[in-house]
Image (cartoon, rainbow over all chains, first blue to last red; front, side):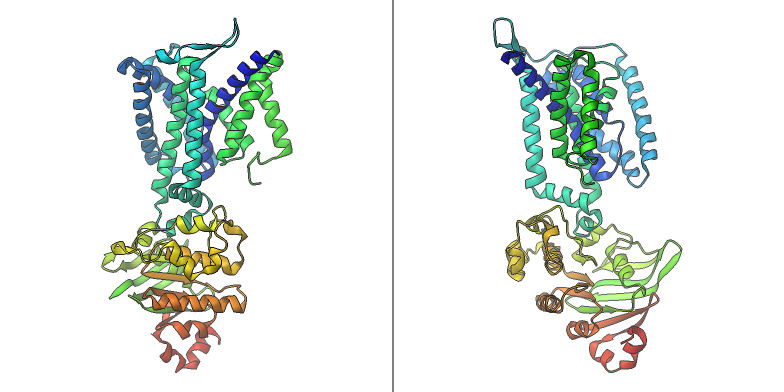
Length: 288
Length: 235
């Protein structure tokens, strides 16, 4: 592989991994903090992509669509937690799987009723649609760099909030001992409701950012959901930093798998997962 | 003024009837010893007062507000801070984070207790600010939970078995701290196996037997009747 192709594939792997992290971080937070297995998490990604499609048509601007889409998905997440997920915390995983699987079907059906089953594309903003030429024939799209940049900024902001602020300390305290945190006057239910909504918004934002490069199609949520679970399992359930590392590993493995072993590309991610679980059964950052 | 007032509390764990009509009050600034053998309902009473186990019947008032069945965080926000048995530090947070996460103004906006004042009261914690909560010794963990409760600027501190499992010297330190906290005007409820140490600091004592109050009186009244202590506490 020549150095330029290697660079391009590395950037692709990085961008793919970071996007995966954005979507999976919400899943691992909700799973780790609230103990809820949320199969509908991929649907939030799908909903985000469709929001980007519908709202860019409505507002005439991609960034207008993203801003409005984030607000809508936070509100959606708050309502969903209040109406349904808050009732799942003390139920066993089977109940959670049943409800959240049902939600996937409902969300897909609603999407079909609202915007139909066609494949759509979303135009990227003009000033990001250029490519940076690397050689005479190879170039790299600015939009993918922009996606990576947004994801890096968000990952760093999450790090600061979780590790450095009182809000983050309270979330971590609630994860380790919910009752004790309540005893110190912290409204854990409300706190977790916002964590959930934040996770929904991150997944939806992932879908919105991906829309211009991946197109918008029915079932795009399930594809992402499976990879998100792989991220959560490799990273260790509930670990945000584990999810970041796992998502990057998957991004690079998948990207270079497709280049180096095109015949077995579909397997590479699962081989990676099996190998890591044999080595560390609780995942990279998991507590066994 | 009654800071905390419980009337006719009946609390169940499933089908077992643990508290059978308990009356329990704490006046502002008062130190109350809560006594009884194991399984007589002390911890259940505390958990009912703090909102962790809602009583099935009866009433809990904080000052003039009825708080029966209120969630624990609401009761905590009224200035009632519990230090549970087993301590409940957050092992995934550093010592500093354990303290800072709890900081809030007390009722009426008081901010008497700051990180600096807590560290002044517990110098040992100051040396270990960056340590993880799980790396502390038992005595340090107890100091951390008491310090953390003080960070909420409470009017009432409920200490459940604060010296349990501690070496005598460390336990003596904790009793010294309990005295200092009492002297600042914070009311305290004390549960401890060391009855002599409790009555040495308490204004009033309540003895629970099988979920009922069998004695409610001053430390002097309790000492005047050794048979009472012997019968209900086995000492």
